[in-house]
Image (cartoon, rainbow, N blue to C red):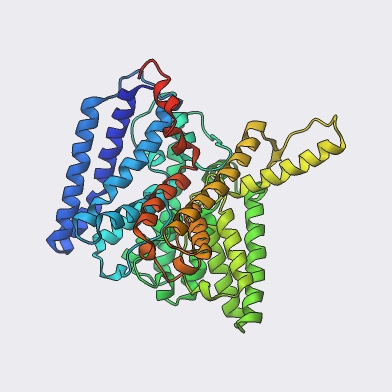
Length: 486
């Protein structure tokens, strides 16, 4: 591993983090009291100090290329460093203690959207903007956005893109990595702008529209009111939000290809069609269940079902009504959509629909090979054959998620949380949803978790956002020592 390259690029990332804090600093300095401005000024200073130290230790040369070890280290350590620096405005401004600031920052950048703040409406707008920005930067990926706007990383930049993007396959739409990152970022920005315009037309003020647009497209779910979407009681807004949450659950790489080859690409994509089928079935079942068990009117049942299926399947976690009070069957279907998540290459969390498709097809292939031992064929996705390594990778990821869900639940049970609540919080956290059922219900926050569980939650949010193995590699002794450059 070349520590000089790692340190140099981490220095650029911390500089990027400091620059991202300038808009909330300006907002705090111009329209708010001085405490908020001072907190952001300190945060920017710490980012600059970190940049200076990292650049003094490392640096980039013209012929440098990022290898697989450097790519993993930059992605993993970069996320960790940015999340730690991101807590400073909360803590320095006196809004949260150190542990809660850490949870809020990790939740923001990981796109989990769970909060420890019981009353967000007392926060200044600068902090609310920073929370939404942390969701937005973390949604597509801090490093992907950084790659789109900063100089070329070299030929090895593909390793960074692979380490941060989600899903079993890492499709590349353009020959140059930076062009690929710029295309993804352009789609991301365009959807955010369209979403903000849509929310404004639905009646939100400009500040609220921008904040909610950022957290919708990032599928993060941070809001600026305690009642989140339910605060508005606006049916048009709920349908608009549901639409953009579903759109954000689709692969952004798919949208890049669609811009070049036409919208037919979207309708031919097997994963996205399967995702739409899953949420359609879940919506119908939940709507019927609400009408039968809670005597809801058809209009209200359909409205609630569409919104919350879109919210939880996209792992955004917006709340329009208290879905924790829904009948058991509705809860089961909501939990299922939460666990599955969106499509590979989207901003949504969860297991990813592509992995489910691959696993089902893999099982079917094994059964066929048992019946026909000489059969030679491959698992396919959207008409393309998938390498065995990718299929086995999906199986390994599924196993890792199961193990970590059980492990985090066990940690919380050890910390005094009962079994049902521990499972609910664990699934919600690992799926990057935020709200769940029971202790961490639709109207609850992570403030109810014991301190040790909060600290562990940060680690599990970090693991889930980088899809586990990128982070676990950092804890391997061979990762750090098997290199002549180390």
